Amino acid sequence: MAPVEISGLSKRFSGVLAVNDLSFEIEAGRVTGFLGPNGAGKSTTLRALLGLIRPTAGTATFGGRRYEELERPSTQVGAVLEDASFHPGRTARNHLRVLAATGDHAFERVDAVLADVGLSDAADRRVGGYSMGMKQRLGIAAALLGDPEVLILDEPTNGLDPPGIAWMRGLVREQAERGRAVLISSHLLAEVAQSVDDVVVISHGELRARGTLEDVLGGDEGLVTVVRAQDDDRLARALQDAGHPVQRSGDGLLVPGVSPEEVGVVAGDAGVYLVGLAPQVRSLEQAFFALTGDKG
Image (tube, rainbow, N blue to C red; front, side, top):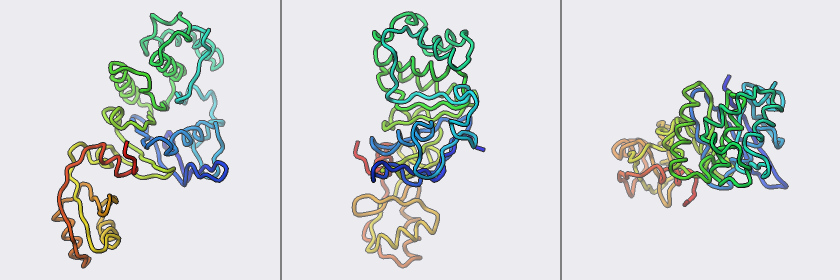
């Protein structure tokens, strides 16, 4: 059973469908990027997973159990949400000591996680004087306190400078190498593409793609065929029946990982007349935008 499983998840707020029939899994020992533009439904999904809101339909579970059913949840799941807050008059060390006492963790873990996130020298300063990047590190320290099997990070690079972003990449890779399932939620593809193994792409609350980074987005400078036909819908069905992924773009179709010659053969077999056919090289960002319909 997967460490994290989202199955048929839907959430409606006052008539607005924020998440619609969403399903995907997160595997142990891998870093998964949960990607989509702002407002795509990522935070709603994470809140449902962490038991902060109740789904309208479907399930969100850890090893088959809802968050509220976990015994000592902080030893199984560590999470940093985008709107994490801290008592400004409390030091980082005392903040973590309170969490350690609440979660029944050894106080030795406090010093260990402070060192892991590079806050040992600032541990006795009040959090109210911390920069945004330091607060982000403290949130990650809190998530690591219980040595969890699953790590969930919502927009983890917010407030981090370039060295901090590089540190974050190293941290999540290290966690995955230790066998943990790591989920990074972000609307910034460029800041997570170098550290993830798999991606789940959503837009308008619906799944757009899932799989390895290379399979879903084609990799930088990946082959894509641009094609236009007299009947794009009919061509799209023929390409899908042949096992090729198809994406809409403007007044034509994008077919990633497939050569113009292969597309031409499918069109000929289907009796579809083509009015345009050409290879196109595109970046990861362009592939992401094609999936989400977002322009940055």
